[in-house]
Image (tube, rainbow, N blue to C red; front, side, top):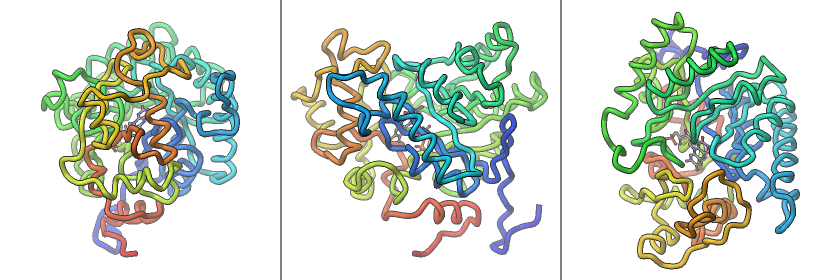
Length: 368
Ligand SMILES: Cc1cc2nc3c(=O)[nH]c(=O)nc-3n(C[C@H](O)[C@H](O)[C@H](O)COP(=O)(O)O)c2cc1C
């Protein structure tokens, strides 16, 4: 490959199933409408894959009304987001993120496939039945998120046996740095063995030996700049999934106050909370987390029954995660929970998605 004018090698394209991303970047799904049509279409227009997070998509939509059918509203909101993304990015690659842990997981997968999602990225649990729910369009690429080689092996074996289908790629999410819900328990958090430097080479070697390199490994967590992408590729990954880097973009679908929270955050402002989903989650230290940590009162009324298993609904513990994340997305920085990766405190200003891509492709910071 010829170096660019900046002397940096061009990034290689990423092939997943029938789809080729000109830039090997998948935008990580960010739930409760942080990544909806605005961010997804902008990323797709730059040659990456734009991902709409399906969880609780209806909450900030015209389809949801308190006391009405939340699950039906989610379907309508997802159809609309897929249509809008396609209008804004007619040729880009658009997919969805579907969390196994949510009650309407099957409906979100089926709706995604029926309404044109080109890929489905699925984690927060092992997506054992994903091929069954997605069978109406075999061209939709199916990409499980895993946090170990063991999980990847188990899943591939199961899909081949039951569905004669090999995953189109795996996203490995590094729990030590990624944002949102994390794939290991509290005790295992921050252990180097679970980090990308250890697991990505293992996954890449396994894919090469067992599947003739046909299952690309995409690494997620802590990828911020071109150096991080080059490092990921040197570990054997074929691409990266990035979420936190896109939070302070004009195209990100959350309220401006939400974005400002990252610009204001400093080193040391990132904390771990115990989510009612039974997983640790990474968040910015805000009034919400401070109240939570001192045992004060935070929103704990279940209003959407969104999770399959929920400590808030079933045992009155923790807090309503949908309510807390929704409040933050709407700009309520006192009562909202702000999920983040460790890197998000590096934001200093708002940018356009196109500027971030220009910087990542050229390896040069873009002045604005
Ligand atoms: C605000 C926020 C919301 C997220 N929501 C989801 C989600 O709904 N589903 C999911 O699978 N991952 C979710 N994630 C994880 C990201 O998709 C991504 O894999 C991870 O954050 C990558 O690390 P990075 O943020 O350092 O790039 C979320 C992350 C953030 C920061």
